[in-house]
Image 1 (tube, rainbow, N blue to C red):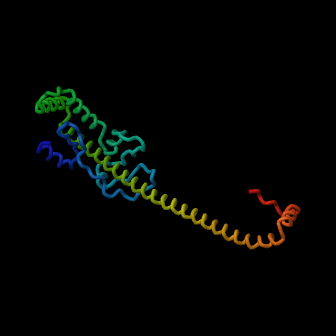
Image 2: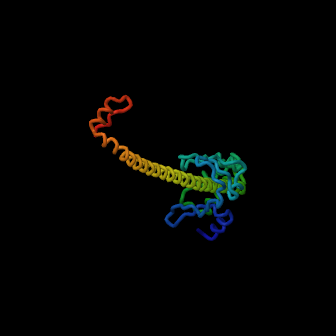
Image 3: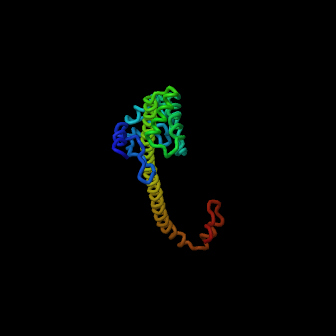
Length: 224
């Protein structure tokens, strides 16, 4: 990036996307909002605007749609930023003019051609610059809004996950405690059975079997 481009980048707060030496594009560093606000329900998709992004919008931007990664309603974003459709059309026209010029055309010649064409359409260059910068500002604001939402979502998801893990731990501990209590019941009941069993053994197996068979109150024990 030239020194002139760097200076321009500083002028618009680092909104530009920088191209590396290989021609690829990388997002210029852009930190998410430091304070995502109080996390709402984990399924919320419309975050409140942070101070960093609120200035770009005159109305709430479109909500982020879960599962629609990369699908952005740019017209809705620009509408929320107060960029008129006419201004957006002028930016589109300038972009089309640039795209239709041969790639080998020198930059200075491209600028002359585009400037002359815009002048012929009665579109001041300053208006194109202003609208283009507004669009970039709105897109950066939308990025920051999404970053705030993602952080809020992550924080709330972690909070709920921790709560679920605590609940799972509590349930497991309660189940283990119940098993231990039952083991204690089994031990106590078997000890008491041994005490009573002495009486039955005293009277003998045949007498016990006869009484059990004839009594309407007793059931024969299961055969093991």
